[in-house]
Image (cartoon, rainbow, N blue to C red; front, side, top):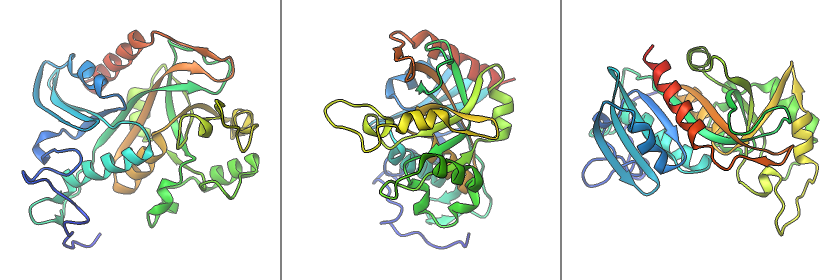
Length: 293
């Protein structure tokens, strides 16, 4: 990338010099960041920290940076949806790869480790609710966000994407799907013992995930077709709302990304886990411990 000056309208900053939405300065984050949707989950993560350096809050974005067994870690809430992920990942990257004072990209690239710890609904009947952890080897985006960026096709698994579009008889009225791989380094380090599969990322919670309340679906068979999709032995294991943007933007910006979710519902068996918090705590503690191994 050429080192060009980035104007204020492109990279807005607050009066104290912090980046606009996150309200953070570069020194307030680690290069290892745990991402969660729920702002309250940030406090749950930092409760395991030995010390906390920074606590920053703005809108639904809460950030705690501290130390765990000698490793500096940031916990940050994104809120829900790929639109929020677009903000969070671009601004985290800007904090480490753009000089906010000169508004110039830095010559030396800093690679971030971005790990999303979330909740999700299973799309395969054999995945039990509550105690199941699914690590996303691939993220299947139904949101279309990555197509707004030039060069995104280089980071998309085109053959898998094409197979999905054909299998679904995908409507041209909907955003064009895309598939992006997880970081192989993080999969090996953090996902041992977990179920692995393809995670579908939708642009909504109700209709886009096949739920019916008072509005009918444009494709009432969408979920059953998603459930039956198989590509080179890989199945779509679960539905959520963030991973495709996380994987896609991280790949394009040169960062490592992985999502691991607690399964709190099964869309096939229609079961729901009311109290999944102990399992989320287990996932958080496992992740922290594996990061310091």
